[in-house]
Amino acid sequence: MQNGSLIAAVDLGSNSFRLEIGRLLHGQIQRSEYLKETVRQGSGLDEDRRLTPEAMQRGWDCLARFAERLAGFNPTQVRAVATQTLREARNRDEFLNRANAILGFPIDVISGPEEARLIYQGVARLLPQSDERRLVVDIGGRSTELILGQQYHAHVVASYRVGSVAWSMKYFPQGLFTQQAFMTAEIAAKAVLDEALDSYRRDSWDVAYGSSGTVGAVADVLAAAGEPSGRISRSALAWLQERLLRAQSADRVRMEGLKDERRAVIGGGVSVLTAIFDLLGIDEMQVAQGALRQGVLYDLLDREQAHTDLRASTVIALSERFQVDAQQAERVHQAALALYQQIEDPVEERAERKLGWAAQLHEIGQQIAHSDYHRHGAYILDNTDAPGFSLHELHRLGLLILGHRGKVRKLEADLDDEDFVRQLLCLRLAVALCHARRSPDLSSLRLQQDGYQFSLSASAAWCQQYPQSAHLMREETLAWQKTPWSLAFQAH
Image (tube, rainbow, N blue to C red; front, side):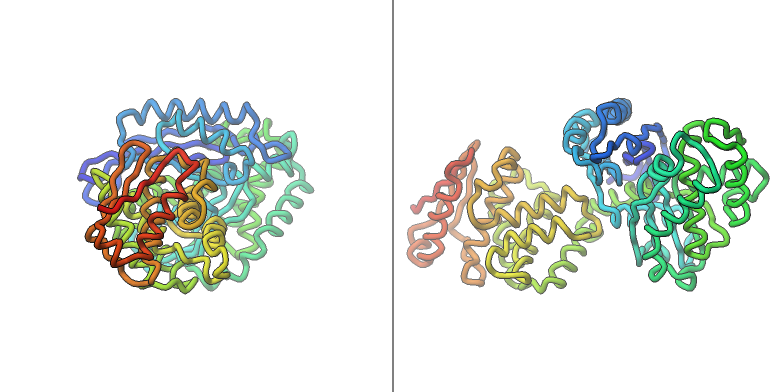
C-alpha cells in the first residue's frame, strides 16, 4: 500500500457502528475521518436470540450512509468487522447478506478472542513505546474483552458475555436505578468474569487501560466533575454510582459530559466496570485512545504481505498442534499452486495464500481419526480460536478441507463461487497426485478452464509411467458430475 493511501475500518458493535478512515503516512495511520452512529443493535435481540426487523433496518440504514462515504475505495483498503451481537444472532446471515450488498464490502464476524487481539493492537499502537505490562479492558454492548500484553504483543486474550447494553436491559429494566439493582448486576458480572482471576492476577500487569465506549463515557463524566482527565479511580467510580442512585432513573440523569446516547446504558456499564475494578484489584484505570477500529486498520496493513500476515503463523501453529505431516502438506501445497497458476490469470496473491493454507491443513483431522479425517478437519476449524482469522474465513477454509476428498456435491451451496471452485479443484487434484506421499511429476499436466468446464490433459507417456495417478484423475472427473461444473481428463 502506497504512502498517503486511505484505508478504512467499519466496526459493527452492539451499541454503535463506527467508521474510521485513516491515511497511511510512513508506516503510521493518521485519522482522516471518523463517523459514529448509535444503532443499539444489541438491544434488538429477542428472547430467541434473533435480531428484530427494526434492529436489522437500523443497521442497514447506518451502513448505507457509511457506504456513500466509502464509494471509490478498493476492497483491499476496507475491512468491516462485527462483534458479539452478530456472533449471537441466529439470523445473522439474513442481516449480513443484505448488509454486505449495502456496504459494498464483506463483513467479517470475528470471534471474541480475535476481537480482544485487535482491540489490544489498536490500544498499543496509540500508546507510547514502553516495556510496561498492560491490562486492557474493553466493555462493549454485549461483551467485555480482557487482554494482557506488552508492547505490540497480546499474551493473554479473553472475551466474556457481559456488557453495558445486555446488563442495562437485564438488571435496570425501564432504566430504574436502585441499590439492589446495582448489587445484583455487579454480582452477576463477577459470576461471569470470575474465571479471569487466575489469568489476570494483580501481579501480572503494571498499568490498567480501558478502551472504547463505556470507559470513555465514564471518564468524560468524571473529568467534567473535576477528576483528572483520562483517568478513572475506584473512589470516583463509587461517586458516579451514587449520583446515578440519586437520579433514580436513566431518563432523569443530568450530568455534564454524559451524552444522550449513553444515558440508557450507563447503569449497565458502570455496574460491569465496578465489578471489574473489584474483581481484578484495580485502583486506577487510564483511558486509552486506541480501540478495535484502529486495530483493524493496522491488521489490514499486516495482511498485505505474507510475512506479516498473522494468519500464516496461525496455520503453522495449528499444523504443529495437530501433528500434521509437514512434508506431505508442502507437497500438496506446491502441486495445488502449480495447477492454480495455470487457470488463474492474473494470479491473485491472497487467493494463492488461502489455497496454500488449505493444503497445509488438509490432514489436520487425522489426529482425531483417519476415517473421515476431512470431516474432522472441517470441524476443528469451525470450532477453534485462530488468531487473525474471522469466523467466515475459518469456515471457508474448513469447507476446502471438507471438500478435498469424497463427493463434491456435498458442497453444493458453495459451488456458485468460481474462486472457491478453482481452489477446491486444485486442492483435490493435488491431494490425488500426491497419493504416494512423494512429489508428483507435473511436467506434462495442463489444466484449463472454459466457463463451467475444466479440462486436464497429460501425455500418454505420463499416463503409462504413472497409471495410478492417471486412474485417480479419471475418478476425479466422476466426482464433478451432477454439479454445475465439469472436469474432463485427456491423454494425448
